[in-house]
Length: 377
Image 1 (cartoon, rainbow, N blue to C red):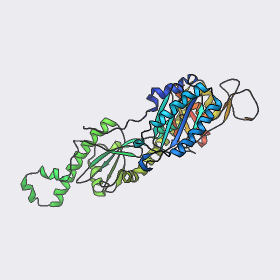
Image 2: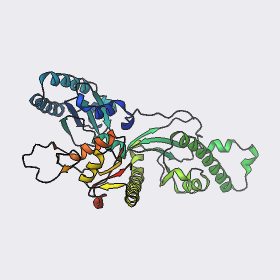
Image 3: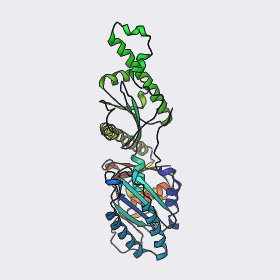
């Protein structure tokens, strides 16, 4: 199979720089996480420089107020270097910029994120994890008599493939017959045979693509072509939806709009499977829920899979025993460490114990008090 074009995208769990930033936080203070909204429609794909400078000025003032000058200077230098290196041609919905005395990293986020900065003893990685949890790779097959195409999709980005085995169209099928077939008694039967032959060749090419990528497929085409394709395809188990319409002359943005509902439905299905896993783990007594219980299990390094609602946050204090979380009377002056968001700290604990993180839509975990953890044991 000749080449798909692939974007180089961050894989959170396999990226050693981000993993090191989480695990060895005590060596890197201060850690600055800067989340910036971007807009591809902006002229020349430029960031809003005035807004960026204003945000950076506030960030640097807070850095100077909170940390020694030597540490601040090193982080400031890295921040300005990273901002100067932003690739404006590949902006998506947001940027995440990470800088500490030892770490520097830019991540292009394929979803909108609240613009903010965080200065802490570790990096703010929830947006990265949310991206990893809710991103989807897929193929879009456009069935057409004259120009069938396969697109590789990543979230809302579609890239046309360059596959040499893909037939050009139904005219290739007609040329395969001897000249005498031109006198075919029933032209409709002749066209049906050619269509099925074309669709089998398209399906064969699709099989190669699925074998290489192992991703779900959405098929687009006119009603008649879809009907025939359903009967002959050997890839039915990989196809998540059929979308009626001829999109071969549409832009990638228009194609994505047509298939967006199919992707949203897949995400809903995936989230329901996670909820089913939680219920099964509960019955096997391998699931804890509620922020305090999850905190304790995460501290004990039992975290296998953390499931949390997308926007859930919880201010708390760590008790005299690090395994206890204080949720009440937070305003009382106690010598306990205050957590801006205990959920973020739990996320870090689970990642450190090599667990996984999944975010679900708000309201999905109502019976689990917004957060649950499937434990290793």
